[in-house]
Length: 325
Image (cartoon, rainbow, N blue to C red; front, side, top):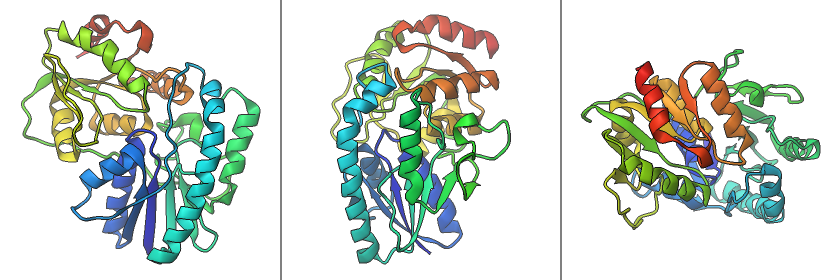
């Protein structure tokens, strides 16, 4: 089957898990085409074999300026509605031109077409909005899809918890976790890997908070900034940094690290859990899903600490990790 994979451009996590899904589908004999935008498209172009087309879709251009998710969504909703309509037209054109037989949309609301099987992949069938009309509008937007794939197992201890409950939906399939990276060798052991990711300006805000605290640490630290665009300016810091780490590099870095600091984005959590890596998690302010996932990971016992970005005390968190290792 010829499948069009279309990951969302809110950070790099959707592209990462879509790459993991593509590897699985290709081993089953399926042919893959790609469509995305923004940082996700940049990541795909760096990860896929040279010359692989990544067809351009309209960008959601998500940003989180407020700690209130309702306010963040309200300010951007008009633009997102226009993006969904443009996405719908672009998807229809790709289905015709590429002779696509199935679409797998990783959280892109407009990537469906009634002429082919349309799958919506998400770990959030029930996003935490705190506002019932917003939750209802989300479910209404998903009515166009034939099937819903959840990158998790279906047990009560699943990583996604209540976010992926099947109530209110038909044709939900738990397809198993999709970690993007796996244990590797080649990197000398060191203390801490810092993984930055997610929409701006919160990605940069966390970087600005962390750097002074990292600079004063006696630990051996690596920092991956999560910026796949070529030509990203270097940071003026004593901490060893990479603007972006491809899959083999990130696999080596995470394998060798004693523990990690990261946003609790779902794709990052799949990687950390698959690697059995202790982590300090710092939810993006205003992103209720990340706060829930971080708390759940801590209750499950593999996240060592969950910290507020604006009250971050890195030495205290690191001391706690070191006591447990």
